[in-house]
Image (cartoon, rainbow, N blue to C red):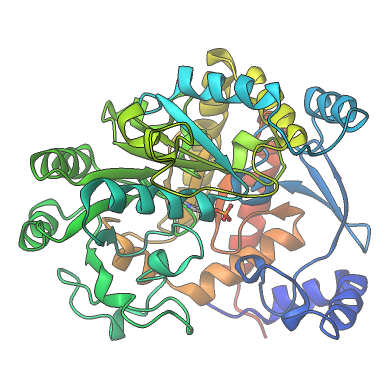
Length: 448
Ligand SMILES: Cc1ncc(COP(=O)(O)O)c(C=O)c1O
């Protein structure tokens, strides 16, 4: 079914200016950008401007945005409450060498909403947030190793750059995955520090964890594999992790950088399972660079500079909790009322049903995963349990569909994960479903 030439030809024809920009960009930036995670072949579109749920590229092509900067823009592009708050703050200074009240406001909003948060600290990225949860866990437990699931993405620092998008053929058995580097350049011994378990395979994972229980400082997990496919954990799997970590005095970390979008209390609220620490990012900065990590007072007091002897864990960052990001984040969260979350979830269910209908009509097996306003499209009839099932999907066909959707005026992440913003309604979703239908019909039509 995979013959990408038709979609590729259309794409090349409609992205002439993006291609020229990319050629120029490559003279100054390796590969023409600063973010490998959003590269796609043959080259990405260059965005000229965006508003609401529309993104317009340098060639003037207007696309519906069904990813919102890797799930960040829950209110769409440049929502008025955020723009007003930021404009107002910009006239009062962008960043200070002393605390500001806006971070107290955002911290309060988060602590009120997130079950595991008694205290919170801000960073500039989700990467720094997960780094700090792991560091705090090591300080609390006096142990060093961490456990993570195969396919879990937690940012780009060394400790979590292990067993992310691995090639299953080279990564050991499904039940006992090897720790694989996600990049070259990791420090010596990094892999030895990480115990890798299979996602959603409760009994097998528990056995592996038990074997390492005396060495583990933390178990870190996305309660829903986010960028890798929007695949939720089972309740049973998370409950096992909670029980195991409590019994063995190991810190359970939920990385909700993406999954926090699913509800106002994150997936920890949806599942009713409270971790010891949580890392956040993306939506809580209203489109500005942010991360946050938090947990119980006991743990977060490690960071307290007024503690006798000073803070046990260092934490600095020139732009941490800068007032522009803080007001943007607070303005965003204030828009996210229970009613808005309900509507987002309803719209995303409508989208899931529309996608499944297209698959059923064209007799193409399709599954739509995700929680709340997050979704992932998978063209498979097989059960999706963990990373290996996602890795087994036909990546060439997925790329064909992704390029086809771009050609039809839809922007998603290149691995077909997406997010619905408050700017997206039934009309946009119907447009999405009709676009997908045309793309799949083209894929089913043999080219000459
Ligand atoms: C679950 C998860 N954790 C951490 C990160 C890292 O966040 P950032 O890109 O802000 O460093 C990401 C980014 O996509 C993520 O999806």
